[in-house]
Amino acid sequence: LQLVESGGGLVQPGGSLRLSCLASGVRLDYYVIAWFRQAPGKEREGVSCISSSGGVINFGDFVKGRFDITRDKNTVSLQMNALAPEDTAVYYCAAAPSSTCYTDFASWGQGTQVTVSS
Image 1: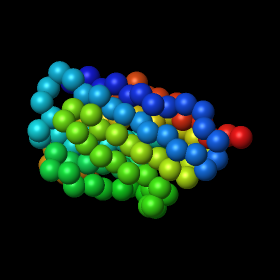
Image 2 (image 1 turned 180 degrees about the vertical axis):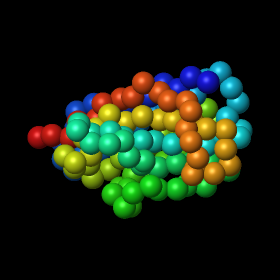
Image 3 (image 1 turned 90 degrees about the vertical axis):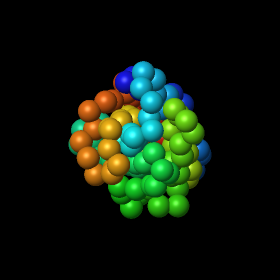
């Protein structure tokens, strides 16, 4: 299983970005896919996760009303709106052969940098 993220970049506060995670190598029918992020000097934190059936878990309050995770075949996207400087981080997608998002993620992408700055 290989995961490749794309869509990161520099955006002004209040702006939007759409991250994509393309999975290849296996069928994802029984995988959950999640987005994590790690800001400089901080621990990695979960953002959102989506199951093969489309069930969504948001791991943090900061997601509410701003981020939306979707899934289409082998691509999982993270639409991020109303971005703030504190959203600056490297965003990673991860996958696990599980029916629940509360699991250990063994497969990770290389990450994509998101920088929110004026």
